[in-house]
Length: 100
Ligand SMILES: [Zn+2]
Picture 1: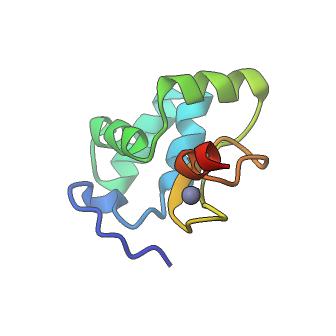
Picture 2 (picture 1 turned 90 degrees about the vertical axis):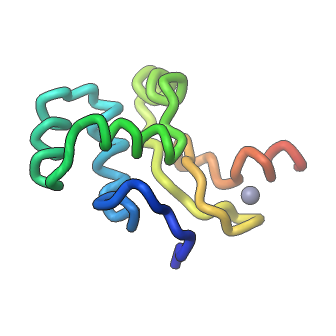
């Protein structure tokens, strides 16, 4: 279990909504993102902030749309840290991938 303290995100701190945030951001469905924010009791800005915090950059979003891949948070096989994996093939965090 990931017990890293993540402070300012409130409702998103436990990571349970991360996959939904990733999927909706990549789908680019503004309306669904708004509904999701309201349901979580927060604002869309907070959802976007969370997306950035977990590493969902515009570049990754574009790449996923183009390749049809589904990024998700995974544990790095080498260091056990959680990172934003670009897809099934991507099992090492960028720091460990650089070392190999
Ligand atoms: Zn690693």
